[in-house]
Amino acid sequence: MKALSLLVFLFSVNVWSYVQSENDHSFTTQIARAKNQSLPMAQRWDALIKSAEDADGTQIKQVLEFAKSKDWYMRNALLVALDKVGTDLVYDKAKVLVSDKALVVRSAAVDILTRLESQEVRELLAKELNRNYNFVGKKSLWIRAQIMKNLVKKPYQSEREYFSKLLFDNDPEISAMSMQALEKISQVHFEGENALGSWKKFVKEQKWF
Image 1 (cartoon, rainbow, N blue to C red):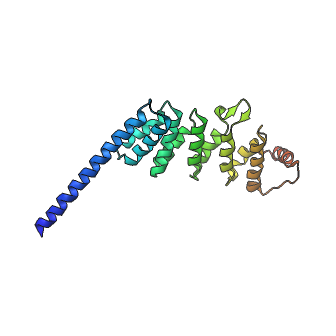
Image 2 (image 1 turned 120 degrees about the horizontal axis):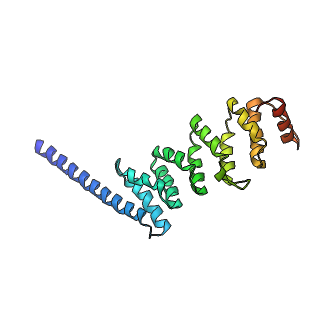
Image 3 (image 1 turned 180 degrees about the vertical axis):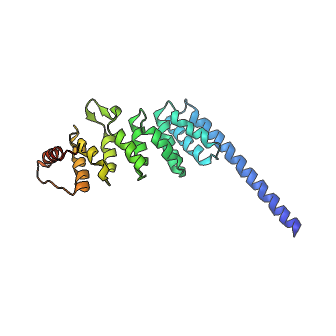
């Protein structure tokens, strides 16, 4: 019986070692492909996702380095890869990449961060809303509405001043959503086509900002 148990144990160790070796080989191959700038975007993207799936606790550091890739699509692929494997590291990287120079990367980061209902994330997104890189001249990029839609879902009393100021935003979509937030906060409602004008007058009279 002891001999049989020993054989089973040795077999299990050999199988594990083989599987681990195969995983290491797969990771090494895939991460090399992800780093290969001569390959098409789709191939590098797919390789990074496979790398994240195969990575162990040490190897994942090589995957995370793509947050600093010079190619926007690989920074975006990093978020997709981390999200797919279900690691909370995706939130850490999203907090960094929400200020990325590429709009599509920032937008992907916002999508991820909006799952977290934390004060830290609300404050981060509130600041990002008015960053210069989220405008073209005075015109809003789509990410501002994306951020605002999340902020107005559950506005806090402490954010009354913030939303009051946004009533005067140049983007009518932003100012309209500001009204929604203030209605939830204050239970005050204005009807009609001039509801926005009424709100602007009201917040000034109430000295909310």
